[in-house]
Amino acid sequence: MTRGAPIPDTLTLHVPFRIVKRGGRKEMRLPERATQPRRTDNTLVKALARAFRWKRMLESGEYATIAELAERECMAPSYMTRVLRLTLLAPDIVEAILDGKQGPEVTLSQCLEPLPPSWSEQTSAFRHT
Image 1 (cartoon, rainbow, N blue to C red):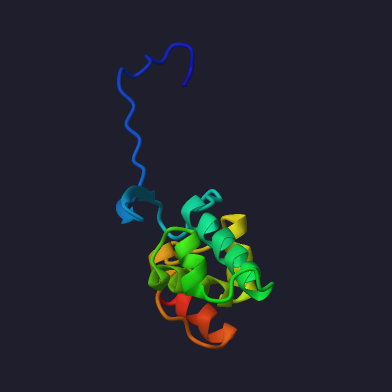
Image 2: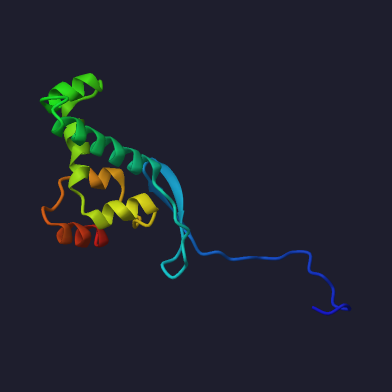
């Protein structure tokens, strides 16, 4: 624009995105080629912390069984068992979650499903979900 050019009254900006549901809330998803800011999934991080804490409590002998620990934590043993599966995640997936670099396919509900036994299979499964 030059000094003599009139200033437009309206400016239109097009931003390609779509709205997706993630963990019960709506989230804006940018196109694949756009750089996305790192965003830590606090629910998933909290579940990871709980899982590793519970594992440590069981391994130390503080609690003899999952049922005993679940009663102490006031939750269903079946839920605790599913959360404890998070301790079996591949280290690179755990690191990505803690750094907020996990893909959109890595959600708590996805992680609570039965996991492939090998870490390389887990990494592949989460990339193609």
